[in-house]
Length: 94
Image 1 (cartoon, helix red, strand yellow):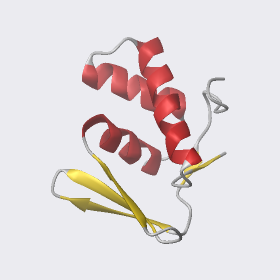
Image 2 (spheres, rainbow, N blue to C red; image 1 turned 90 degrees about the vertical axis):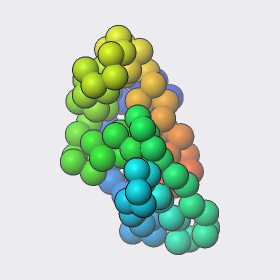
Image 3 (cartoon, rainbow, N blue to C red; image 1 turned 45 degrees about the vertical axis):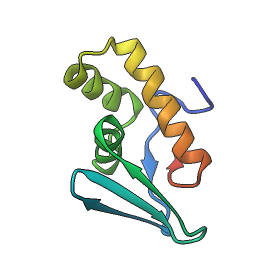
Image 4 (cartoon, rainbow, N blue to C red; image 1 turned 30 degrees about the vertical axis):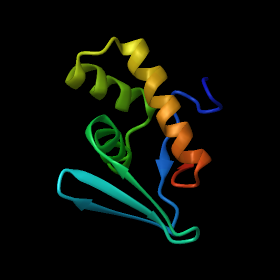
């Protein structure tokens, strides 16, 4: 467990968060706060994997294979990134 998120954790998007693809970027809008965030590259790929229902380990395996990253490093990075989205209220961990 790293950053309070378990390796097998899955995530859901809260009802107040909207996401849209704009060009090559996924834009997230938190309707409650009015804040928006842009994800591209690896961040966009992680968001897409979350939307597909993958857990942290599955997402990390995808990132490791697609971006030529060591699996342990990919898992640490995925957990850190997803933890930051949870902290901002853009995802709920389960």
